Figure 1 (cartoon, rainbow, N blue to C red):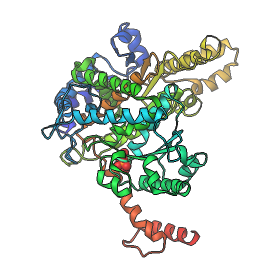
Figure 2 (tube, rainbow, N blue to C red):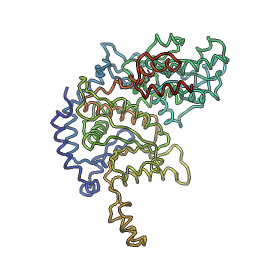
Figure 3 (cartoon, helix red, strand yellow):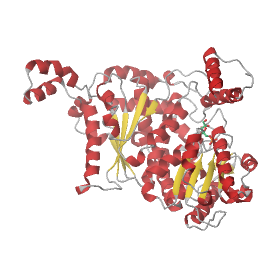
Figure 4 (cartoon, rainbow, N blue to C red):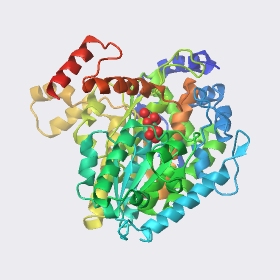
Length: 548
Ligand code: F6P
């Protein structure tokens, strides 16, 4: 396996970076009238404009060469074919199979997984229709009004993000999410709910996650306090997991379990039965549209030549900034309130996948890996942290996402959405162009400012510009488009991980904190320490114990 720095294209890119970094995007656009057209691609109802990046034709050629030398097409084939590319866990990586249409087949260990995938989708359809149509009744015969998904990480963030994004498609069922072990969240969610009309989805791939199981037990206790009869649990608790034994041990009947498989990574699982809360919210037909949107991107990713392949270009641009410009973060700004949770969702997808310090073979990486991903919906961010993007000293490559049509036209001629659109376009333009000292001076002279004020203010009012952005412009936030957008990011993450030669599908880094918490927990109740702590932790523990 090749470390990226050993690839000839890497060295060429280093030399090329020295030529590119002094160039300004303003000049690149001025000198090349075809740039906007050429550096733009369309897929489904999404336009991906990547022309506002600090690249030339040569940059792209070198980045594409890097992808070829990293054997990206080989790794893509391996992923889709069900090979065990999650090397540290010896698992296949097949979230793409979850959105395959009927009639396809994907083999894992010689067994076709597609019949099971479609059997679970059928189970989800049947169950969700019964609940949504009021045929599934609670223990007192009433239909379900509220659904509470209890899960964390990948068993929460995908469903939270998608159910929020697709609010215009919701039925009257009310959706709630509990992830945090902080009892406040469960308490606040349950405050206004009635056990008679509430359905709990206990979502956990492993069914061993402390937060989820503790929340699930407390939810069951809350339920039984009113229902009294343990037999009633079957009408109000279902489980979504790969671990049937643990589900049964928890007390949930096998027939109330929706299975999935170890080849679905937690952060890639919203397409599986983990998406049941989504299905309950929007219905199975809409969920299938979400899957179809993702599948269309899978086909594009699998078959389009790299130079026309959106996730490939997204990933290579990520590598360009992360490793050559040394940009340590990547921002995502959805100009759509419905996508408010997209940055949080992508944070897990990207940072848990590509936040790695060793290569696939366990040797240390020779390059920096995954960026810190962050973001917030526009226009809010503009009035908070955009100052740093425009005039700070750090380079923050950013994605701007915006629908052309709103689900909620408001004001004369859809005034709200027009203002939103104008702001989104204006920000990427401002980040590109900046404002020169000459422009600033001319502006102040026209406004009649005194000469010494002009001299004093010019540096403060000057914008360097040359800040790179991608724009994702789509018609409207539909289930299909959302499915496509998520899949684009999933594959981008894979492209980056492939170039960095890391395992993007394990997450050992979350284990240490879990183990230490298990050691500390009994000490809070006065048990002696099983292992010594550092002096700071020791002291904090004493303080906690003295105040508990
Ligand atoms: O601790 C991290 C993690 O393992 C994530 O990868 C996963 O999405 C989350 O915990 C929840 O895990 P589970 O679905 O098994 O409860």
